Amino acid sequence: MSEPPAEITLTAEDVDRLIATQHPHLRAPLRRVAHGWDNDVYRLGDELAVRLPRRELAAALIEKEQRWLPLLAERIPVPIPVPIAAGRPGEGYPWHWSILPWFRGQRANDLNATRRDAVAEQLAEALLALHAPSPPDAPINPVRGVPMADRDDVARKRLANHPRLLLEWSNAVDAPAWSAPPVWVHGDVHPGNIVLEGDRIVALIDFGDLGSGDPACDLAAAWLMFTPVGRARFRQHVGERYDEATWLRARGWAAAMAGLLLGADDASFHRMAEHTIRELAQSSE
Image (cartoon, rainbow, N blue to C red; front, side, top):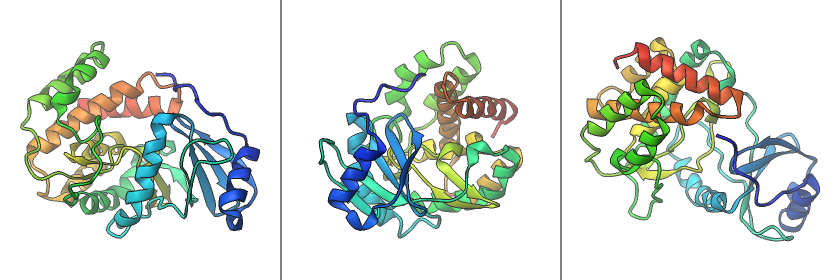
């Protein structure tokens, strides 16, 4: 699973020109700190970051975050990356981009899973708040939050060489589908998108997969993030909000994510996949 090639390559000087032209009052020293599948991230001074799409597919995701995150931040009890300034195409750069808060802390994926267990209730509370009914014009993500049958062909091909994960997926596809009104879903809740400081969540980040639908894809974090101890606390805190069919679908999403990440170039994502496989194997819940 190699990262897709960049369609636009920017230097710090290019990013500085964009900021100087559109948001000069925020101009500060720049250095690139992340080079993801979809975006490059630059540290801007001590308190801010700049997030810029590196391929066209990601450009619409930035615009989605700019529109919806200010509204969602009012209800979610942990910080999220609400844009401080929205950048526009310019200086030869064709897409929208954002200036965001910089969250100090560590990615949960860089910490031992037993340490991540400390935030089980906090993550549960954040997802309970997020999973509220979505408005009619909420975005639809074609790969997350959708009925699992819509992704069945793709998932089966990806999991063909992993019988245990394929069984988890098959059981999930056979479970009753989400029948309640669609709710907001983050779409990519995993330890790489959660920033911790000590025993608290300081940010839930990367809402590029934000959409509306079945929350089971977010609840897959129970296996992606925690040990059995943390998972039990996570499930206890959400109480009876989700039925057993939803948890069964969540296991299937966790299996699908593990299959996707097994071939990752990023070693931390590979570790996440191995952790998830172990958790699914030893857990019937």
